[in-house]
Image 1: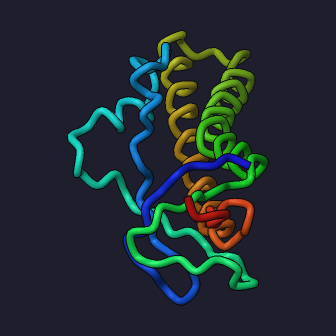
Image 2: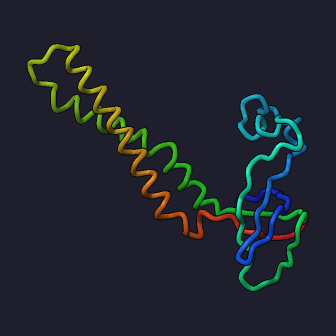
Length: 155
């Protein structure tokens, strides 16, 4: 499980809205200049970094109230699948479309410029198809519990 500390900014019937807190270890990390989390944390303090809705345990074991500091977690397997879908799937479809177009027109009697244009347009179409597929899958999987953060404790 991947965990993060967050502050509760709103309470709903089926979950809480949280805002992640600035990590003090970012200042001493060697990768801080190339890390996206460190760059976001480097923003002005007090600026909202986006809200996330986290589900509460179904057994009612946690009583969470406004401004509590809570620990939220996301299953690692779901996170890795989401990262693959977001980054790799559109690029793989783009490369597949470009390779397939190159294979189709490799023996044609087109000029090199015309072939390159067709392969480029096919790559752009493949990227667009990958992004549309990503949107469809994200809408379809948005209710899946592996992709939703959960409150696991109160700090």
